[in-house]
Image (cartoon, rainbow, N blue to C red):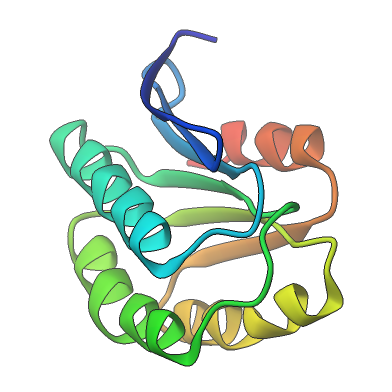
Length: 134
């Protein structure tokens, strides 16, 4: 896999896989609002600049999103992403039960907007599925 790293901190790693057209973030721990939004914003820039259609969210180490971050992602970020070609989302859910629950609305909302969404507990399985999409 040919990847470039665009964010690499103690909180998050954000890569772009040019071969498979995948934006991939991995939260290393629960992240604050600024880190969450910055990660999704930089990832969006990568997706748009590369005409990519796939995103792998590895949220195993993250916790519940705040109501404000959840609303921002659903109401502002996602519609723009879908408008710019986002088609497939592999979500590796948080190990934390509250974190998992906080993403239920995202999965429902994005699916209703036509996004192909699949939820995983294993990152390797998520990547394999995403590679085989479109």
